[in-house]
Structure formats: structure tokens, C-alpha cells
Image 1: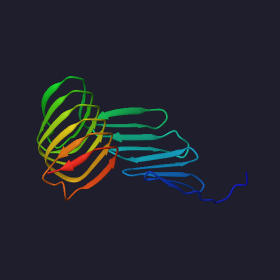
Image 2: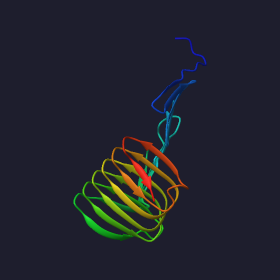
Image 3: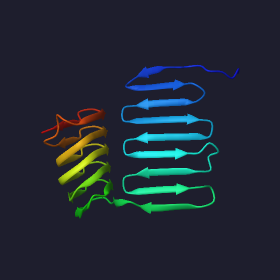
Image 4: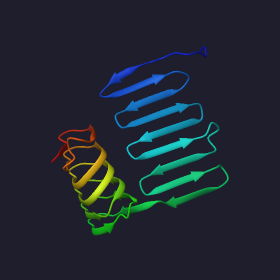
Length: 182
């Protein structure tokens, strides 16, 4: 195939894919760029970036930062991470990111949290103070937030986010019967 600049645009279900000496995929709340050995994924609380030769990778998500230069690697916990099922807990965020993975949990978050990521089903999360953004993946989750400053992104079905800021925030919704309300 002759090397050259060409564009392919496909738009369906809120997704755009383009190719111009690389691939760029845009989904509401997420952008994926691939060009040779270089990959960059950004959105939904996740950021992955690799170098041209694939030897350097940086991964950031709420509560964790991972980096490697091909010879050395390091993991740094930058927030609070909960990986449990059927768990009841009150945590103090103290300005950190909070990541919750699991099902049937009942979590109360005190203190301010920069961003909150919830992955799972049938969870109840009560945010007593404020958060900048919430990223939710799963079904039948309920979040009651005193204040959300920027963004709510939801992937899944039958999720409910209650906040007084419902009319003022950016909402990305991929799924059925997801609601953000006062």
C-alpha cells in the first residue's frame, strides 16, 4: 500500500475514527491516538502515554500512577483504592483521588476528593463534600454527591447520580436509563 496521507471518518453511536498516518478514535469522554509504536489514551479518569519506541510508558488513573523507562519501573499510590465486594466503609479522601472497584459496596467519602472512579455494579456511594469529577462504569449504581464541580461520565445502565450541581456540570452518558438529577 502506498504510504501517504488519507482520512477515513466513521461516525456512529457517538464514535469517530480517523486515520492520517495514525489512528485517532474519539468516544465521548475518551480519546485514543495510535501512531506507529506510540499510543495515547486519555479520558474517563485514565491517561496512558507511550513513547515512539514503546520503551517508556506512563499510566495515570485515580489513586495510582505507573511509569517505566524500559529498564526501570515504579508504582506510586497517589490516592485511595478500594477493591472489594460487599464492603461497607467510611473513608476520608483528604483531597486525594478515590478509586472503588467491586460490587454491592456501601462507601461514604468524607473530605474533598479530586476525582472518583467507580467500577462495578449495585454500589452506593455517598460523597459528603465535593469532588471535581466522577467516572462510573457499571450497572445499577447510586451516587449521592454534595457537590460535583466539573464532570460526570457514565458507561453502563440504570445508574443514578444525585447532586445539587446537576444542571451545571458536563455529563457523558453511554448506556441506558442513566440519570443525573437534583
